[in-house]
Length: 79
Image 1 (tube, rainbow, N blue to C red):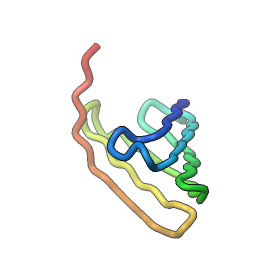
Image 2 (image 1 turned 90 degrees about the vertical axis):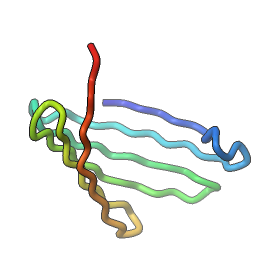
Image 3 (image 1 turned 90 degrees about the horizontal axis):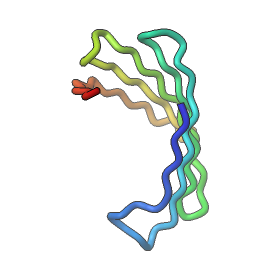
Image 4 (image 1 turned 45 degrees about the horizontal axis):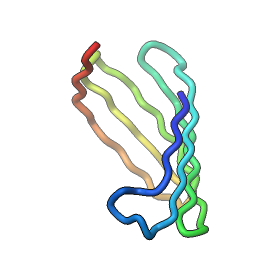
């Protein structure tokens, strides 16, 4: 998994770059590491995703500031 994002369309004055790399450990489990530079301040984040079924995904994360987060996502994918 590799993803790169630059400035947001919402606020073009804010200089922001984010790079995410990850590894799919199994059919259900993925681990990602993201580094974001926003206005010169760096934040690192570790994200783990677990897919219960094809459309239901649980995500947990922690960043370098000690902030925890979690999501339960219902995703529709078209092939």
